[in-house]
Image (tube, rainbow, N blue to C red; front, side, top):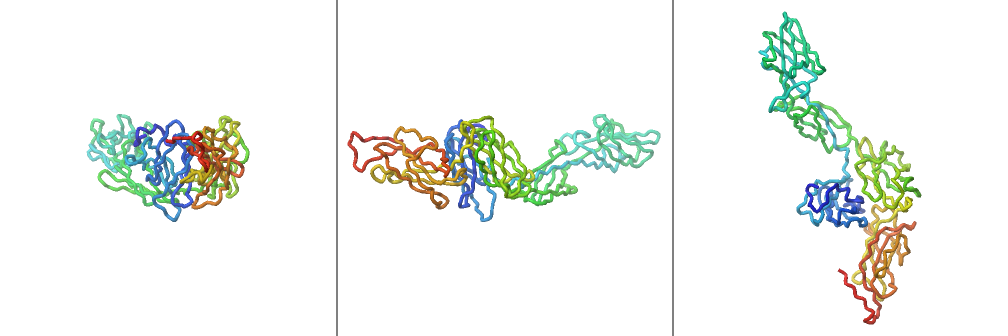
Length: 526
């Protein structure tokens, strides 16, 4: 991967990630970026890039649970504004001092309708002939093409030659145009005047020339018509100007101009010769499509299985928008380069129910997908995401809430005796299932992580958000002296739990009266 340290594994950025989700923050001053690293690439540092600038360096353990990270905007405006958000692996590097990731925009929400592709043809002009003793003038030729009807001039990529002969047969003058001895076009007339040239040998070359005969011109004479192309072109779209140099390799040229605002825009192409002479300007217009509004939030219709999964969303408010699905296999990144399915336009605000393609077979795991609204081949900039979980039989499981953050209450995790206090916080941005409560598990030393859906030791209502976050403290009385770990999960009203399996480091629970020395447990935590 050019520009990155050798500690970064080879491959595309998107292959490294199982989760890459960008949501607006509650404050509007940045984004919340959810990341989950795929297994097989090792634990790595990542740079979060917003609008071309590194705003955070974060550490991801391979295969660990998805986590949210703050990504502040560098230029905050009150009006809606597009922001490009990308992430780039840094390997073992924990800073970006010597690594430029500003051009590594791998995933972004830029308005794709702003770029215009302009295709145009380079036209050869013929002004005069050489070594013809002044007998041929007023050339007008059509069907000229580089290499097919002319031969290159060495050292002059914008010039070409066509050989000429002129013969007299009893006052009938014949003009021929040739390439390597093969006749491309010819014409005859009696006496001086305009000769009409007709294509031969399927050359497509035709036109006319004025003859003022004085002597025959043979192939040995070395007479030729000199054709010229413009050396460069000025292309202007809606006031944005770019220069395209003639490559000398063909008559078809193209350039991408942008960003361009949506609407009917004027396009001009002006040729300029190698001596600085400006030719006639060609003018056209193009309707630049605007970005459609995204669909509503995606959800899974109740029930379903791996071979009958229905998703639902409110269609885009943009009339005529259709929908494209980008899908994944179980526990794999989304295949964002190839559409898995398309859906016709809906009628806002009537919800659309879409049965998405079957998976290869029934199995437990996560399926990840993106749905985008499309209008005039322009995708919306939001790219709605959904994560669907299946059990081992291939049945759709209830959507889970996000994973909460939690820690032992400081400075002391125990308020007295064996009463444990654990602080928690919950960020609801992008949650698949709506959390209504948090659950506390207190695990004795050596105890296994509780199974998904296991009964908790204590619980607490999620309450009301403060500054965009839900916060609280869970309390539980340890059943005995010893070392304990704490685990906090969020849960929905339907009983779906966040799937996090990392508990806090062991802490010592003690009685108000210290136990006898033989009962003291000592733990060293690095």
